[in-house]
Image (cartoon, rainbow, N blue to C red; front, side, top):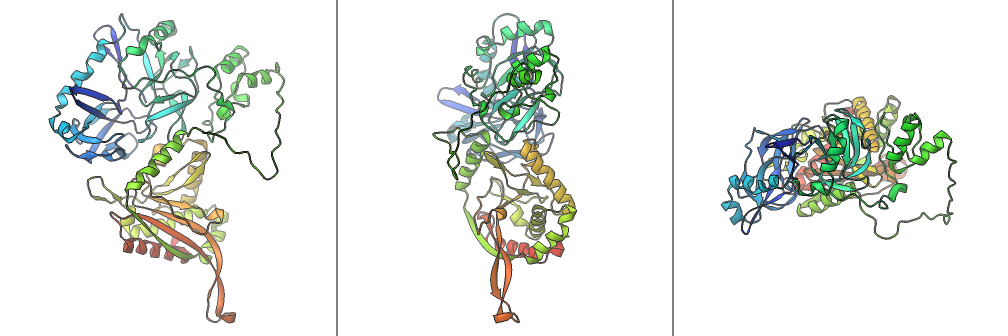
Length: 549
């Protein structure tokens, strides 16, 4: 995400950041928070308000969807990060706004919302411009922490892909960011030279916070770095100050592991490693990285150059049959924090569950027949769900913030995928319209991207229904928690051989493979009869699987 650097008058440089949670004091005893246009993808610079889901005076809880935004990728609901009362809507439906611009305001009380005048907001922000450092500011471009998902409020810089002094072209990846969903490379929207890195690797910054500065040319690097140093930039009009650079001893977690894998063609390395490799004309792509997230370290470069011997690793023998367990408090990753937040949000939703046993002999036989063609069990289950969802569209709907039933015009089946330290739900879009071979190919591609942390937001945020499948773990039955923004989720357990009454068989008993499925539904829009109808249609598709082909 690029946040524009704007000139005010002839001297003061004002950096416009995304004020997702900026609080403005408008009058004594009155405070409002901005509802800002979020960046729903790393390439989004502006968005259009398709519709407002709330009106002036409405009560908003943290996590409530407040508007639908059309970005450069898709139309998505945008949630509020705070609770309050809608004080003003300043960007009408159908109008565009740049990322970070206030499109509405929340007040703490209903009385403050009623008394709020939106015209007062700019006046409150005006003094910030006067607080800019004195003297002529050098021309520069800010590299900011982007919002890589609609729920992301902060991100951790996993690694910098550029160093101070490096030339950056528009489109070049400059850093790897750990968001609440995945680790992703962030590209620059501008060209220039890296003048200053303000947030170190391993440190966290709020969305919109400036994490680095670009100078227009090499001659300006020192001047931009001096002007934009943390001490000099302290008075800059930022909604939330960027975290101070971590102490030198802090990044001691280099031995920790993650599921992140660099984008093909990209090589991540520490600044010292890059400097040494450059001085020796060594191609970093030929060096195997042993650092955190697979980064190339200085020791890796030295080893590749033959100027250092491999270090011996002392292995501590573990007790047979026991795995070393973490001790003490371990910080949660951004993904884990997001999962925790989403799970807590479901506590306010009244849900119910319905369980059904489904025979799988014919389903398993069809899978074995189609397996050589690349068809997967996940694709077969997604297709079965899609067929049932078309017949019971209410299960594919969601509860609207204004008390509506929001029917979806697409059947997008998401399936939970476990990752190291969390999970994500890649989505098979329009699953009802795709063939089994197309679904299987799409699913393999999505899982690969999920493992490498390269899923795009529209590939994991557009599900209208979710499957949680633990069948491969010999699970008899389980309940799944309803994801925010969906009406139902289906939990699928393992298939087991069970005896059943079978006329004509020896002793009147035969064997049949069965699995237990449990659907969790939002009771505000879905009734027990609706859930039972869906399970009936799902079971029919599984037990008579020729309808899937």
